Length: 135
Image (tube, rainbow, N blue to C red; front, side, top):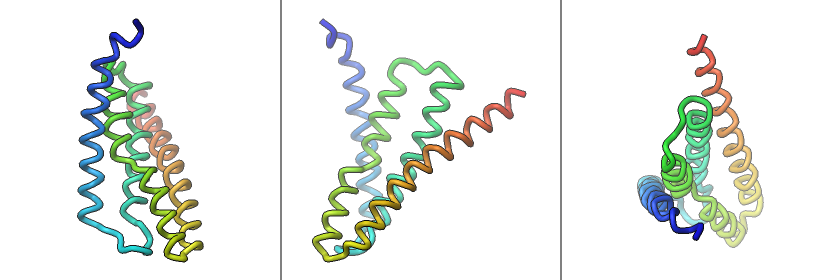
């Protein structure tokens, strides 16, 4: 049965998800966004999480052979639980309900641009740092 050996992977993803979600929840408690206001905390969490994903993926794929459970724990679990694109979608819906379509559209675009840029820039920067150390 193919699923038989997946128990440890599921467990580390769940554990990492709990840790990441708790960190995201803590950020939302520290910096709450009032109803109808720009959701800076969610934007910051998503961009920061994507930046860490860029670094992590380079380290795991280019620098050291990660153990079997490292990527599921950190990449899928911790960072998947920390970044919150479901809250991003709810934030857009709430901005639209608050009759703030321009803000909703700006948030939609800024999050996508910020998240993609963060992954690309940190992955490229990490690769550059690594190649400089290998010379």
